[in-house]
Length: 130
Ligand SMILES: C[S@@+](CC[C@H](N)C(=O)[O-])C[C@H]1O[C@@H](n2cnc3c(N)ncnc32)[C@H](O)[C@@H]1O
Image (tube, rainbow, N blue to C red; front, side, top):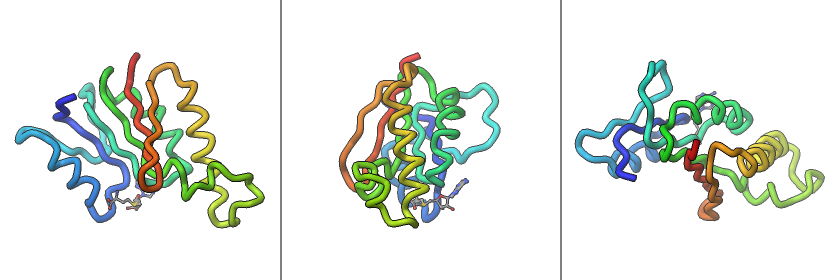
């Protein structure tokens, strides 16, 4: 996909940001979320507050160009998305429920093709198709 313009939400140590930056050409850019006007991104990585992912999706899907990719981290949420809510420790429930809703929503979002990558804590790749 030869990305040049990328976006990250949830920077923290910058580890994932650096991984993205190292994959870019010399004239590539990694942006933090701010007013970007009409500019569109090739790639966005989201690793922030899980309860906001669905809200981020609504905004980011408009900021990523058709053919661009949005990656959501932690979409298996320690495997708790595959368990009944009662089996999930209380402190993980809010985020587990938010991720579960996000995953269901993305699976039926006609604007994106979705691939769930079962590495680490799960990464969902969404390629914008419209
Ligand atoms: C799991 S860490 C991200 C780790 C990062 N990808 C890395 O490689 O170091 C989550 C980050 O999301 C940030 N965060 C939490 N809520 C946020 C919000 N509402 N908006 C933006 N960032 C948020 C936290 O401050 C934290 O830096």
